Length: 135
Image (cartoon, one colour):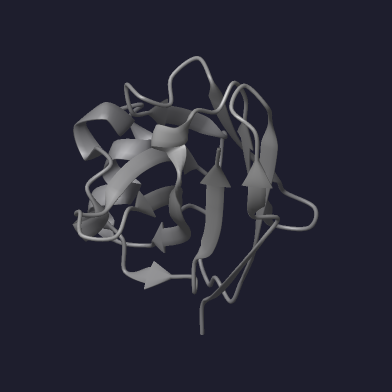
């Protein structure tokens, strides 16, 4: 079964950088979507970044674009989120998530990740989450 385990969270000063990691395992298909989603207490989960595993194509939220980079080490199947120029609004619990469903496969194969989107409901497997605090 699919397992997602995040690491690398912690505290960072505004303007600094932090890298989150997610060890992903248990996949039976070679093409699936991996994403980072965050949640502030009392607010809804917010999709941050998305990656399609066969070609590593990516898609970002407006708040992440230009500051965050999602990447995948295919050899180890570790997903990363490099966060630069962070600000206090980035403080949240960050989750790694994946989707092996048909909608992800269709969008990824056709270069249509924006149409697939970053809605948390798209993902069917989740890590336990890791806290990032920016002060």
